[in-house]
Length: 612
Image (cartoon, rainbow, N blue to C red; front, side, top):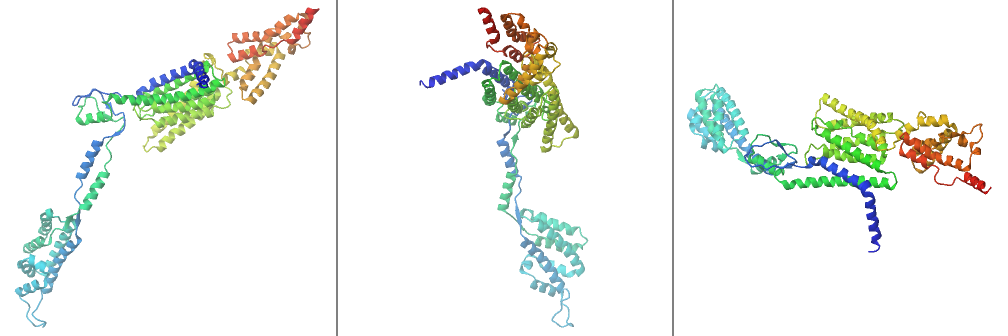
């Protein structure tokens, strides 16, 4: 236990030290994000009774399957499947063969004679009938009476042939469609109708009517296996009855029917307890985001690269970016895709300029995640991944294209690169989509992407002076401005103490090289070196680099006075810089560049004077 106590104390000390400077601002940001996005996940519940009138249009907050409706559709699909029958081709061939057999036999006996001699007398009608009954199949003679055969023998062959063609054609057509037990009469009638409306003799038609009664039989039989397979296929083809997130369940003024009530119950709009879970999910997301931000800020703090101004900048930039997304989301729909116009890259540009590239990339990712929630159409449980991807690429492009920052024009150059990436991302979504876009919609969305990059660049240029002046954050752009020879204070050094100016330039070169070698801010060191000896302009001739062709003024004053002048110049310079409202870092360099060491030359000179 004693070994753990120091670690516990160290942990408590850490939280005490970080609570106000880091953890408290992160907590404020987390609460802000939670309150701003709570309506994106919170589902309103309703106290509704059946058969009441809906007071407002109610949308589904989630996507869910209505299993009862799916089962009803499945039953309906199964019931709509007709029984499957198997048509027997054997029966079809058999019945048509019987008819052909009858007419072939009649044709053969039409000119029949007694015996084999050509001179023998022809067969009588009765003899033909008897022989016909002998050569025909028993199935035919048993089911047809003699009058059918007798009448056929009376008609000429050409009339019989014509009738045979009409009858066989009708018979085959009916049998091939299939004749079930319950459709025999209708099938017989169909064949008779074809014969009835032909040009055959009425007496011959009567013969064919009787042949129809004989030839048309059941040839289609119920197939249990095929019927079962058809019902299974119909059931499998039924799409689940889905209630989609954002779908209207009931419109204002409509009656809350049993079906509507069950749907409201199914999606959780009547259950207040279900509202807690989305809030817990949002809280977890915010905690994860806050944890990443805390890790990065603590890392910067441990490297002495974080102060209160930068913490405030991180807090403000994050709030501005998220607020912009929220403001645009109020007017965004799935049709207008307004998230394309959000200048979210502004945050990445400011973060890189004011804090650093690493934290700019981290916040770009986090802002993209928040965008998926904010632009979810206030549909709990859904995320707009398309918006998240667009925001991510737009911000990463801002970080990557912001290079070689020498002036504010670099921001506009980065904006041009961002616009290209934004347009490519919009085209990506258009080409991946199955939807057909009108040309005017494509141009509008591409315009949104371009406008987003332009607005982000303009806002960055406009907000940067605020962070530099009000929060006192020194950006590279500000340093480059201060390094210009046209700066009034640098002109003052050049004109009033030219030797000091040359000395400052040499110190600036050495300082920048040294800082670059160890990974420090070389640009800050260079600009600080330009101004570090500004205090020498108060008494420029008392410093050796400015004593050109004149005697040394220190020879005419006491060592104490000389020491006072030398020691005073850092403070004089700091005071002048404060009056011009220069950045704190530059003021500190000017004030501290001599340190607290002893001014030995004048110290020993004063000491000798006292001895004398």
